[in-house]
Each structure stands twice: as C-alpha cells, then as structure tokens.
Length: 202
Ligand code: IMP
Ligand code: MG
Image (cartoon, rainbow, N blue to C red):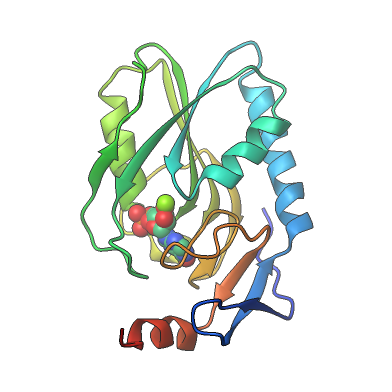
C-alpha cells in the first residue's frame, strides 16, 4: 500500500459566498481511478464465481461504488443503507442512527459493504454488527479512504483504497456540509475554511 500524494493546490469556487476555497489535492483523479481498478481486480478475483451483494453507505459511497461495479468482472447486486453518525459536523458525534435499511434480506448472501472513508470506525462497526446479526454467508468491507490515526472503534476492513493523514477531505463522494461530493479527486479543506464556514452568521 502506498501513502498519500500531496501536490499543489486547487481552487474550488464557493458559489454561496463568492470567495474561493483553498483545497489541497490529496489524490488526483487518475490516482483515484487507478486505485479503484486495482481494488476491483482484487475483489473480482476473491469473489470469482459468486454474485455478491454490494451494500453502499449513502451518500458518500456512491462515486466509489459506481466506479467499482463498472470495473468488476462479476455480476453483482446493489443495495443501500443510510445512517447518520455525523450530524453535519467535521468530527464524529459518537452516535449512529439508521435512516434507511436494505430492501432485501441478506441471509446466506455474500455481502460487501462499500464505504467512502473509515475514520473513527464508529459507522462501520455499527453496520458490521447490524448486518452480521442477519446471517450473511460472508461479510466484508471495502473503504476507499482510511484515516487510521483516528480509529477508536476496532473494525476489520478487508479492502482499503488509500491511507490518508488526519485531514478533513472532500470529493469523490465525500462532502463538507453536503458540498464538493462531485469532485473527481480527493482534496483536503484548510482548517481556516472549515472554521470560516462554520463561523459565518446567517
Ligand atoms: P466514522 O464513523 O468516524 O468512521 O466516520 C465515517 C463517516 O464520517 C464517513 O462515512 C464520512 O461520511 C464521514 N467522514 C469521516 N471523515 C471525513 C472527511 O474527512 N470528510 C468527509 N466526511 C468524512
Ligand atoms: Mg459516509
């Protein structure tokens, strides 16, 4: 596994305030695409001959999930779970609430949970316990980004895209207050941008 790549800055226009937000590119688009292809190859090999159910965690996983399934050489099914563990802040609030459950039963299925990032591990440990109790044939986790330094809940992640330092990142599905999810790369937001936006009075 390789470390993060830091290269230069990129301006993401801030439509609501008119000012530009400085972001630092952590993973370029081509690096994201390359790593997803590698993960897809690994998963295709591991699940050869099976039809796994990919469970995406809304909303952050959607870009990773869609790129992943396009690159898999497997027939898969897709379902979604939505939880809230963040309450619109840049740090985890410590509690998890299930907002949307799966459509189908997962008993005796090969389930692969797909997530954008593992940070404290709170979300994935909750999901893991909840799904494990339903008797899947197998249960594995793929997280595109891993902020290992912040882990407080022990979770075994089977497929990790890239380990990143303890920075707040956006893009490739990840948001800051619901923005920047559509960026095709991963960028870190400056502390001043996080503090600045939260400090803006209505
Ligand atoms: P955990 O429960 O602390 O592992 O947090 C996982 C969730 O927090 C992810 O699914 C993201 O939605 C969110 N999150 C964690 N770190 C970041 C970040 O750097 N940027 C945006 N969202 C993040
Ligand atoms: Mg998330």
